[in-house]
Length: 435
Image (cartoon, rainbow, N blue to C red; front, side, top):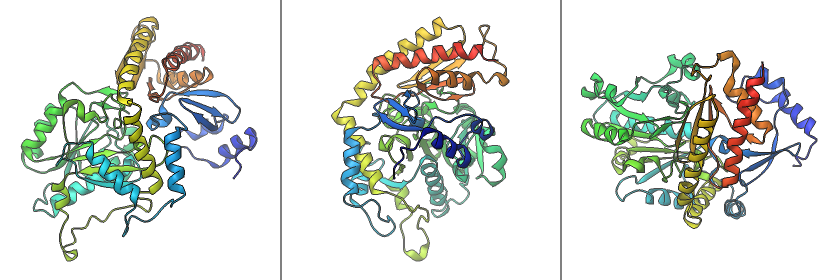
């Protein structure tokens, strides 16, 4: 199909027929959308030929850049074999190889089983359903509660949304949610009566950093202490590494910073390098064994999706992991993290409207406030306006309230990182001038 239609038609079709996620559509339909048509490395191009730096890695998914030749070649080679086959009743070669590869990234006899799905929400959904069913059919039916942390975001399917601590996203559907206890800290979790009573099925956390909570960083050592607390009460630890996985924090997985192995590890976003929808829930042999039995025992995990373990996605994921080894990606991330840290420090010192910055690897949050540290009035929508103005200076990124997120692709050059920060600086200045 030819998508080289005139830009006016593409914009009109979007405004007349599309419905975008997390988007106030009345405002959206009143302006012309940016229709992206091409991408190379860290640069995207729209239907009118304008170029932008991809400052949020296409919603935190793209790792090595757009149009990476190795991932392109892997998808094309798999496409010449078969694009999709059912994972219900058959296996496929890329999925088998990917399952083995993912497990090999962890110590032997730790995470040994991989359950594939489609996205971050379903990776979490699988983990909490596995945890609940494990306890039900292995002699502990009272372990029915989950613990999540305040202001967490774990996805939008019903189970994953149950864990969410962002009222704006989830409160209107709360009557349909799983039973969840929310805590603000490890200390609060340790004092929960349900923990001592053995009623908790699992504790869910985004390790080291909460993405949607304005890039909130957990205290150093907190994850290791959480693992010890879960061990002491034989409670499953479920790590949501949908955002932090695959190098984003400077190690392949955030949990490796504190040498923690969870009972469930949920992966998506960067698993295919930002190319195709794919997710994986890794778990232990203990959990897997809890689902074994005769068919008549009904221990089967009855959950799945039509495109589970899609061969194209698995082929892309294998190529993505190969790039880490061939291009020494983690060393590159370390170097560029230091460059980003210097750029953020300069922005904070030079710009009176930057109240604070937070960074972990190639993850950054930039808080905006008035020079006296007072928040901007909500109606000013300073974060949103800053991103909108930064777009005019060649940067695509997103805000969370009045926090600007900057999540660049790993292939971003030092010059491109500098241009991203310059666009944010100019975006702040221009947004201050708008009524």
